[in-house]
Length: 247
Image 1 (cartoon, rainbow, N blue to C red):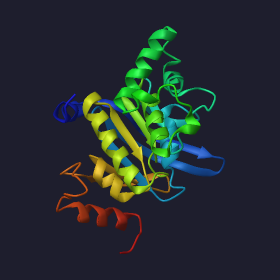
Image 2 (cartoon, one colour; image 1 turned 60 degrees about the vertical axis):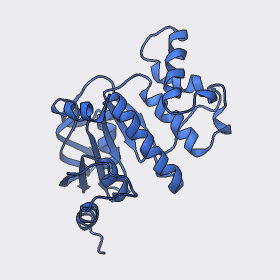
Image 3 (cartoon, rainbow, N blue to C red; image 1 turned 60 degrees about the horizontal axis):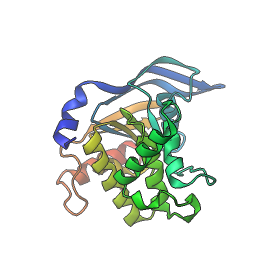
Image 4 (tube, rainbow, N blue to C red; image 1 turned 90 degrees about the vertical axis):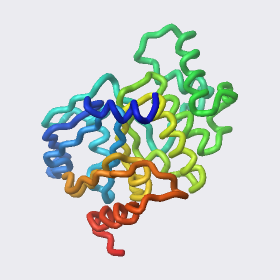
């Protein structure tokens, strides 16, 4: 799927939270949260530690049910974390096939689809490898393949590149965009990296105290780091100001 086609699909929602509240004991961790991710859209969610970012992701993923408000998700969302969370007793291809366990496909078909997903992330030759033999970037690619093997309409990413070195992080960003352009899924990216949010997203939401306090629309999206937009520094400064960071 081309970028133009993916961007044209934003009219319908891959996932949406409407007026969501969530409490942990006496702590009001999500306070009237409204977040919409269109199909073919990348939305970044940023905020300080404890602002509620991961809780929003958990509600979207269906991992948290004791909340009020409405959750609407198209199909079954896929989730990838900062740590790849691969099973060390499974080889790479069966780790990826685990993403299809709810599909009730025959095992042989699951393996075929897992191998196809590994090809998509550039690891076709690593299907028989064990997770402990992989580099950090390779392990994260396997995690991404496992999330995408079931062809979700909504991909949820919880700081997926935060533990990687700078060069690997840039490579993984490019891979994510290639896969997004090909498949057209919606993405909700939780990140602490303002530059990453600006580089990848159509919209950036700032969360503070469990509330979305600011929305930034990126008008000239997904420019190369070597060819930044004239607006990049303005976007960055606006988001840092909303986060309370003084330059």
